[in-house]
Image 1 (cartoon, helix red, strand yellow):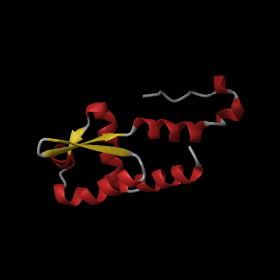
Image 2 (cartoon, one colour):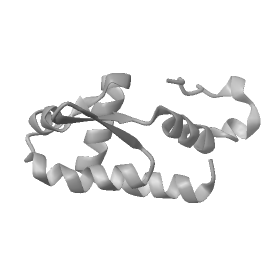
Image 3 (cartoon, helix red, strand yellow):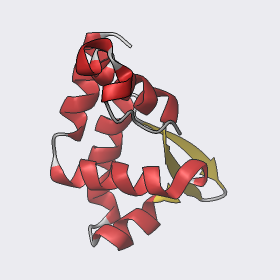
Length: 105
């Protein structure tokens, strides 16, 4: 992953609601969650979440899929893992045995 993409992703996550949305989607796994489910868990109006979804989507952090009349969102685990790899690439001076390495999804 290139530094520009990592910066865009980190900037998208540097807001409380978006960070919580993303964490919920990571916890939900590949099935994701509907906008209504996220709004209910976060106690936020569904309409106000669309702004946050757009920012996360443009950063490559989430994907969406229409299922009937609902839109389901899920974390893009490939991008998440790429970002973690980028951030930990030179962990402990390249001595991985000294570091607690991150889990892959």
